[in-house]
Amino acid sequence: MWWYNYLLKSKKDSSWYIGCTNNLKNREKMHNLGKVKSTRNSKPWELIYYEACKNKINAFRRERYLKSGYGRRFLKKRLMEYNSERKVIENY
Image (cartoon, rainbow, N blue to C red; front, top):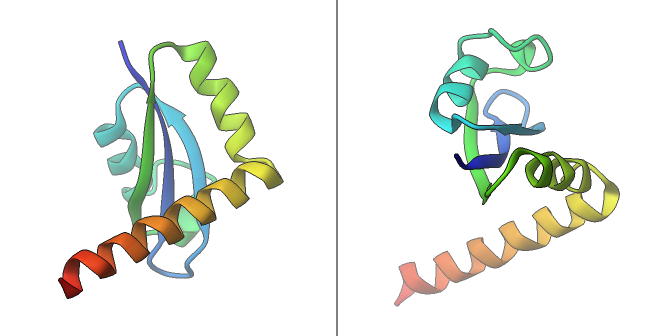
């Protein structure tokens, strides 16, 4: 079974939420239905990034890293690279 680390961005206030799950589609749905206490006030949410891990232990370790200052910098850099690549492709 795969485990996923994910990044949601609020369409309401642009805040981020970093989490971990073994069912990505269902988890995103739960966030947008307001079933997750920590995110219910900033819905709707958009999934903007995810990674897959082969086991739960590695996934939760990765989540802890992504929530750190270094991890957030990694995500910002990763998203900037993605957006710049996308712009190049769109302009091609």
